[in-house]
Length: 242
Image (cartoon, rainbow, N blue to C red; front, side):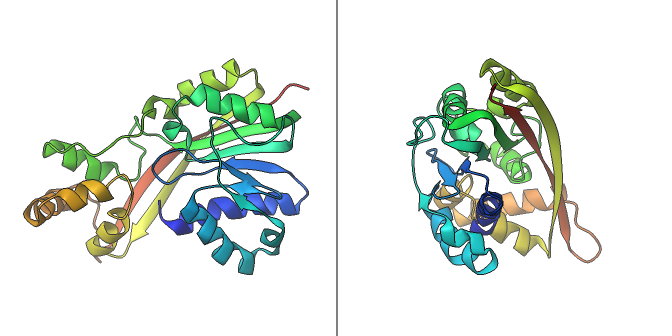
């Protein structure tokens, strides 16, 4: 995920803190899982830490009161009932044990606090990189997959939230569309993803060209050469019982 999208996640948490809400959040690039906490601290990936420090502060004064830190989503380094909300942003499928990660979020949230996540629909065709990944697999390649992709299913999320003892569980599907100027823009943007980069780097240049030629007919290219791709994420939230 580009650093600019990671920064948007940080901004959301920082703005919540500006409203007096203590927020714990998590964000990773690829793997392993990291924790992000906002309000006074934000445990996150190194890339997001750097992006947040340089990008968030100029446009969000509340970022000046935030502390950016890394941590472990399986053992969040904060005391129980510390926060008003805990959020995982595009993380859950990377956590070795999703139920344990959620249990940690519940632990650090005060009674009545919110526990939430959103994650690309990795098994239902909602992942933004699916067009490329499908063609790579058709060529016999095996790009890495997150260890817990099934946790991205809406029914799986609901089960995890209910099993964690959360109340008032609500789900929502988030549909998004991104438009690229042309195929080069599409390729250069998506090939930087940790989900693709290592596999592409190990491929022969002729195989990369073959992949690109197979990919072009799959993409919705308009008369101006622009490519608009849709994606879908599943979101869920619940409250820790009072």
